[in-house]
Length: 491
Image (cartoon, rainbow, N blue to C red; front, side):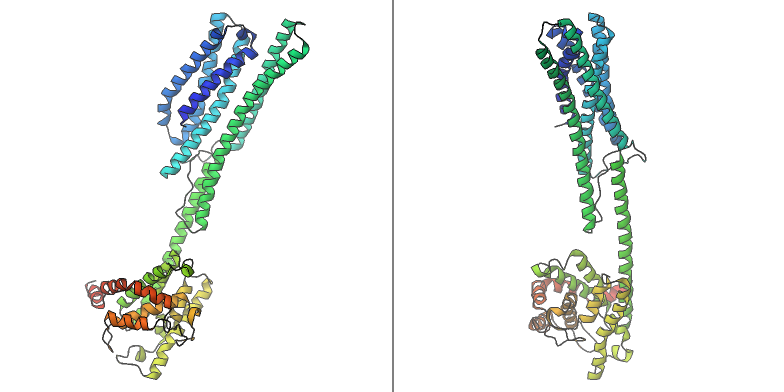
């Protein structure tokens, strides 16, 4: 239901209630015929409604954060002006005293205040939903009118309204008792008076309750959006925001929450940049000492990422391989041979095949890399991004059957990151040309990987490799050694 439609319903109810109210509190109005009583009230409320509909277009063009306040003032003003108009009409046409006009004005003021509150809260809810849907925000004032003061004013106004209306009803009934004298039994008079008071107080309290429920609805909406955004942040989603939809303390709270999330996102981005630069620096250091090409690093990290995304489809790995972990695997993969910085040049850069003794020394690069990264990791804590880098460097030469090095781990005792890197590294080593061997065709390399299923390699990862066979071929072609060297020369 739109706000104008809601307003029409309120005005219709108010017209009926005010007609009853007038007859209950004022003996002068009670003396009029039904047509004389209702017709001016009907015309007054109809005119108010026309003016409000005309003003609605102007209201919609005002700044969003001012619309609720302006609408409240507009609705309350229309009721006050309508009450003054009715009082003036009765004074001029029927010569009713000022006392009668005062009672009319009190009635319109009470109804107008409560209806204006309910319509303003409804408008606030509509704007909140609209802004949230559009992803837009308002800029709340730095010192908005305090909610505590709003509560105080509303409670005071409601108390005065109830007491004032009850007083007017009792005053009218006392005059009625004086007029009737003993012609009506006291029990009947008592029942009549109590019914009138209950009716009037019930109507006022019903509107008070409607305002309270409207406010509670808006408060619930704010709390839900606030909690939803904070829950998203707790899950790591730093793009979450709380819609800033009200010019009050809740709006300020939402704005401060968004500023906090933004600051956290900036700090996190800065940390991620520092992490990535650290990984890149270490990888560059390893590359300067290695006789393998930079394209080997580019290919293997893409193989690892493709394998991880495929393996994630298996239920046992779905939680372990989330987006952040796969991204870290991709960025950490270039560090798999960082331990080669500790291998003597005579062995590391030897153009021919290594002797058994030299190969034993070369195998030490996995241990050296793991220990170096473990020292760095210990300074940053067990949740450090270096954990995956250390696992890859230390365990990518371990074998599923336990015959690998440096720790002879087997099966799932080998970290998943190392098992992924093992397939990626061996495949690339097989298809790549080296000074001591030619590159191997994909079909032959594939056969070796498949043959190593359950021996050298994790069966699940080999199965993923088979599914991704064409993807591996495309990565190898896109980052070919010759092409990479040409790009470096041009650069």
